[in-house]
Length: 293
Image (tube, rainbow, N blue to C red; front, side, top):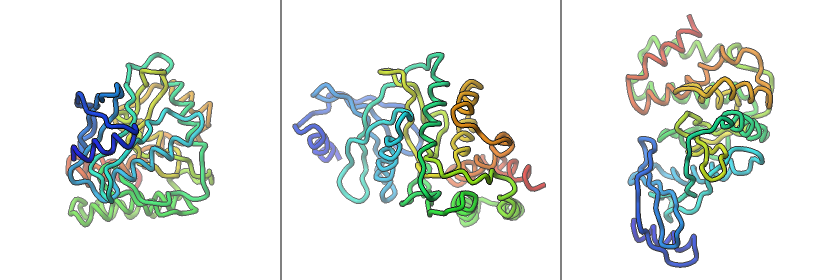
């Protein structure tokens, strides 16, 4: 892998470069992440995975490129290069150093995210599948956003949990009832699909040190119901009230979002159940029971 890495670095910079220093960078539980200091005085971000799913890093690279198209959106690290082949084991990305957020971060982030969410296309979904964590994320395109969310988010994860024996039958039945009621539970105002980050928990954004701009990364991109991105920001912690007020001012949210929020996050709780096991079962059951009993 080292030789392939040096070859990709040479193709990026147009000349041979050496790796002078490496240091671990905090990341998720799926990939190994490092900052590489190079002999040309550049620093790049390296993600590695010795056994990634097919197209794993290719999909992430496409997602970052898609997000970079949003004018006025958050800062997005630039994809630099992938190991050649259909299943790259490493991915080189622009290194963006983080800094503690200043008092303006939440409002800036809200406005940038609203700008990104205004980018749209005709269909919910995407022209290719990608990943949510290491789980395949099905992006089969649909005109109807509720059908997309029900079938390709909740029901897909439900079927996966069922096959893996992680879903008790009574809860499985309740999930069926919830899916049958989806049109009465989610916002059905006919908004156009929004460009979404798709995995916008607190570990996937920060303030960039260089220009103090909000930066987002590690996406699971698709076009869908924009409230799902907002809901994810409140799943593991939350941004300040100033963030949600500023977002609403920039791109008003329809009434009832607070009641709908947990349904969007049910997708991520089911995915965590599939990825990490039974410790997430009670969270799934709590959400499903709330909307079916």
